[in-house]
Image (tube, rainbow, N blue to C red; front, top):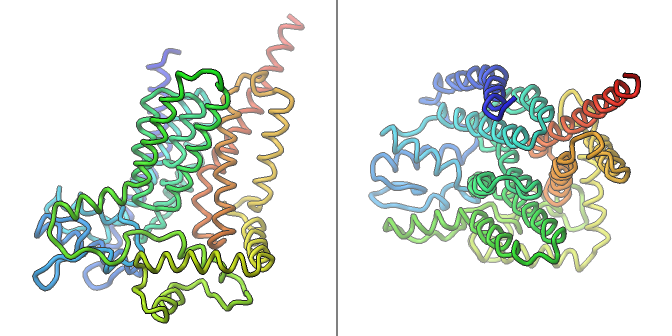
Length: 435
């Protein structure tokens, strides 16, 4: 089968397996239209995004709120919020000439998840991991599109999928188009969710290091790797570029708060997810109270610097207590399933690690005809490890762990492909031996 026919087959699979669920969920978002005029979203930032799109329609600006005849940065209203959803909704409002609604938010989340699912499946297909790609297309629609809502969290599984494009493309030495697309995807991911963008960036650096170590004596490839690292860094800084562009284009008072979640805020409050000797609570109001007592503005640059000092100070004061907190949070994620029905997350991680180590140690990847499976499974397991790290450092909430299911499906698909190709190889050898 030629490449054109293979991609036609992929398109047919997408149409048959994904588009039906996409259409159902996309239309289901219309239910928010029945009460959007009289009720607001439970997620406060969502309502501010919609106010920002009204400002886009009336005055042509983005990431800003119009009020009292002046513009103010959206960061002063949607505090500690990533700018991606507000920016994308403003772009939609600019095209339609109408402010966005709750229906548009729900549909944006659905669209982002669909793009993530199809893009990741397409990359796997291009890597000739056909069974893995098919497993993702068969099982993915329920995980990616079986639910939706109007907070940013509903799009995170799609963002995790897109965050994996660049490191996976690098470590498998995919076509340059996938590298370029992965860099663009990383920028979108970072705009929508900073922490997921950091995951993709960390794995990108890891993938570049693997390639560099595999060719230590070939200096000619180093400039290309360095260029990818620089571009990936630029993608990670996409929120800053967008805010700088807005500030340069429109006259408004400078923002006193950062347009970001802020890593130090999450790390320090993360110590309060379980009972601790310092009385820290995982509660934004607790952080705001700390800022008030210190006489600084909540979520300002000074606030985040203070939180870094507090976090590092707690580690230096009692590293054993910090280790105990992190151990308890790790167990909370490891002991529960992220996919329903399914085994606990710790069992999934253990199965994947055992399979990767055994298949690699005995050199089975090439023997069964799926050498690219090593890199695919390694990236999938790396994402599982990063989500475990997120649970340890921040919080082991199910809502924040569910997006890892994108790569649990990839891990499952890789193992299925390994077994299927292994059986095919054994059957072929048997036929040759008896023929």
